[in-house]
Length: 214
Image (tube, rainbow, N blue to C red; front, side):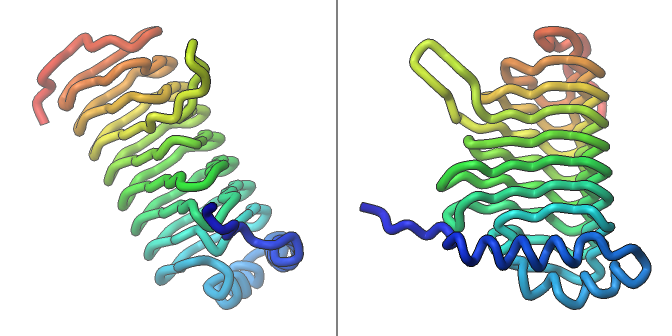
């Protein structure tokens, strides 16, 4: 049997207490205090990380932050076990109200360098999720690596390539891959793979301009 590596209830309570106390201190003082204390709580915290007040971090010891990461107000990052991982690359920006949930063992979510997640974007496992470098995801979009099928709950995972742009309110469903340099129009629902260098729109999303010049 695999040993339980989840933090104890006492560890979680101490972590929540410290993070809660620090999260509501207003700037500029709060920003400076968080820069001093947070590196001791996260698995990794790079240089010049900027975190606004009101953010909630659960399982911070399984969260890695690269250099120049920006996390704006009311962001929620939740990693439930130490067997899982959430990684934000250099220059990533999470706009206000972004919610990222890593709910189970052996689940990882990776967001590449200089990616941007707009306000109130939701990203959730339990399947693995990879978002590429310089990819922009507009407000109120959802990336969900789980789906109810006839055989039960799927967790195949999602991969979004580099230099992609997803419009406002896009939904990306489990088991899909979006190739590099692809645009997905606002409100689209991605239920199957979209090739690189494409423009896709609609419900379900379909390619309308293949081989878009890069």
